[in-house]
Length: 269
Ligand code: PGA
Image (cartoon, rainbow, N blue to C red; front, side):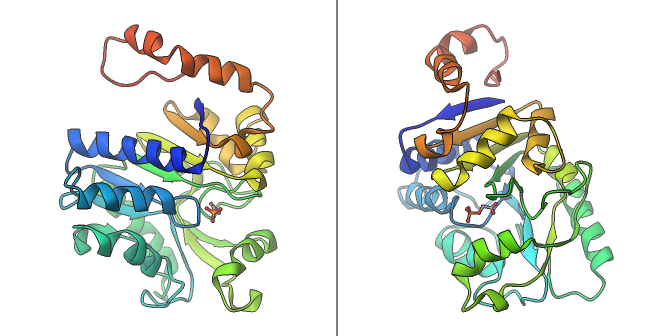
């Protein structure tokens, strides 16, 4: 796991956008795993700015979002499809038919979940998955206790998650109780996972998933089992990490580490 501690949230967004743009520059038809929430917004803004500046195009990429609330139609103001259209898809040249989110309004959810997994497989798997982290250590809507081998399925949201997300709704009661989410196992299948965390409210979850044991009680800790994870943190989110000095040291000699690698794939530590 490569832990990169940056000055502030703007640098986190800019570094994440660099990772996207480098991939799309090499592989214009890359498959991107996308996330909603407050954390990736800066990254999406940066990608839109770079698109408008002619530095990147998205016409050939395929995208799969992590999750969607059950019961909200795609056009609902708080659906994740609306979020993605508002902040990214409609701001650039994404192809509507290649932008996938789970559908939270189908009756046959089991089938919808299996179809979602199949669509990811048929696209050749996810090349780059961006993630936030919940204050309870969740990734996507894999709440504490989620199987670390789980696939796309329905999950009940914790009260913590519902109250964290209530700021986007008129009231706590309006926040759905269920969501369709990629599983932890689905996320672990991505080629490269980039987790972003900013702000002191994430510091405890960040410390647990990086430096604590692998446990279903902290679903993000499953990333310790993945071969290629980059964690981009601002100072506040990194503030409880015990081994901060080591992570900073590794970054300071990153050029030297990369020079030892024969392939052009960035090294992981
Ligand atoms: P946030 O959510 O980016 O809005 O903090 C992250 C998450 O719940 O995964």
